[in-house]
Image (tube, rainbow, N blue to C red; front, side, top):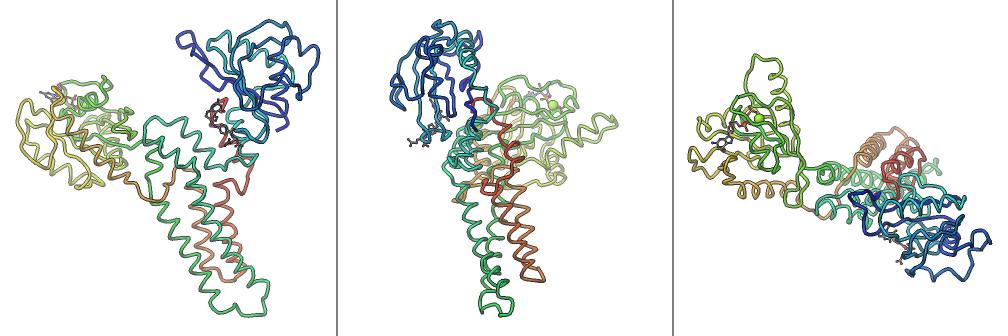
Amino acid sequence: MDDTIYALGTPVPSRAHPGAISVVRLSGPRAAEALIFLTERRAFERGHSARDPALPEPRRMTLRSLYDPKSGEAIDRGLVAWFEAPNSETGETMAELHLHGGRAVVGGALEAIAKLGFCRMAEPGEFTRRAFENGKLDLTRAEAIADLVAAETDQQRRQAMQQMDGALHRLYEDWRTLGLRTLAHLEAAIDFPDEDLPPGIADEVHAGITQLRAEIAAHLDDRRGERLREGLHIAIIGPPNAGKSSLLNLLARRDAAIVSETAGTTRDVIEVHLDLGGWPVVLADTAGLRESGDAIEQEGVRRARARAASADLRLLVLDATSGWQAERDKLVASTERWDGARDIVVVNKIDRASVADADVVPVSALSGDGLPELLGRIEQAAGALMQEGGAPPLTRARHREALVECQASLARALTASEIALAAEDVRLAMRALGRITGTVRIDELLDIIFRDFCIGK
Ligand SMILES: Nc1nc2c(c(=O)[nH]1)N(C=O)[C@@H](CNc1ccc(C(=O)N[C@@H](CCC(=O)O)C(=O)O)cc1)CN2
Ligand SMILES: Nc1nc2c(ncn2[C@@H]2O[C@H](COP(=O)(O)OP(=O)(O)OP(=O)(O)O)[C@@H](O)[C@H]2O)c(=O)[nH]1
Ligand SMILES: [Mg+2]
């Protein structure tokens, strides 16, 4: 944390995408000093102090030339700003160089900083990690920043923003406060072993733990957040040759899957990522469902069934020209987790046979007829699955694991044979909760979390 770190905060400029502007950020005790040496020609040789009046007012963008500290050559003329600790993103002194985009400018600026000899390149996520270390944000907010940068759809961005505002942090800290209050009751009872528990305390402890368990259980059941981060999984299933791959290509607007008149063309699961009405979707095409003597096709059918079972939503695609009602009844009955109220039956090839049935969505993957209606139905089903409630959703496997551990400890506390053991279980449960927000810090965990960030974040 004593180091002054620096990194390019914008994408690496390439020949194809030089970028109009590139931003380099520095953070640490010598960031302001670096800015002086970079913006005052020859100051580096002469020597200068961070208190030098040549620094612009903090938080004020100022147009300056940027010089190589060794040669004195001008590298660029751009806007610079600095932030005085602790009033910055990281809580440390920070400086920003807003350069012209382009590889030579950015390369020259990074080299110039390196030549100062007292700054080093930042590790992935190191800026955000410093913000965490300096108490600017908790781990759930730090993770929300990574999610915000990764967000590709409106709904993903909304969720990340909600988490960045501290919605999850508040939820988990409120639970911890409740648990710690219960723990205090238990500890009071241990400290006075000769006395009976005051009347009502045992009930209060029991009620507190039970309430906590119920709230955490409801939160664990809520898959909205993880679905939104990872994408809603939709599986296209149906008999061979019904036009499943054709439909996937139509929805993806590209030739992602091979289409042919031969039944049994698709064997592997083929995934495409789509934005359907703001919902991130992972749409999967699968092998046609039929009994087959071919071992490879059989494996494809096994994968298709597995995908149908694990998906959040299923599209059953049938062929309008060949007894689709009987096929539908058979496949609906044999598909695990089929939900008549939510999953969608699509009857394809209506360019060749008309379909009048209010319970199915008629389409032609060939002509595109019925596509708007199908998209409407999918968005409606996605909306129902992701229905926004008041409580912020669980968003990460890391949080889920800690909450599952918390639940197990609370369950043990309820059945513990001694008060001291119950107290220890509640203490463990609260440690698990504290790990989510970082209130209980574990260095290895921090390494893992911030390693997944991009450099410069
Ligand atoms: N130029 C620029 N744009 C950027 C960033 C940046 O670092 N530089 N950010 C990088 O992520 C994001 C903004 N995040 C920021 C978070 C906190 C502070 C900050 O100065 N916080 C102070 C003062 C708060 C205030 O004035 O209300 C503080 O917390 O004490 C700045 C940027 C997005 N845009
Ligand atoms: N007339 C007509 N033909 C279609 C339509 N959709 C698909 N086809 C044709 O039906 C045949 C099968 O299409 P695919 O998309 O490969 O069918 P599939 O369900 O993926 O088949 P498998 O991968 O073998 O299970 C191809 O010859 C397509 O051109 C449609 O809406 N109308
Ligand atoms: Mg296919």
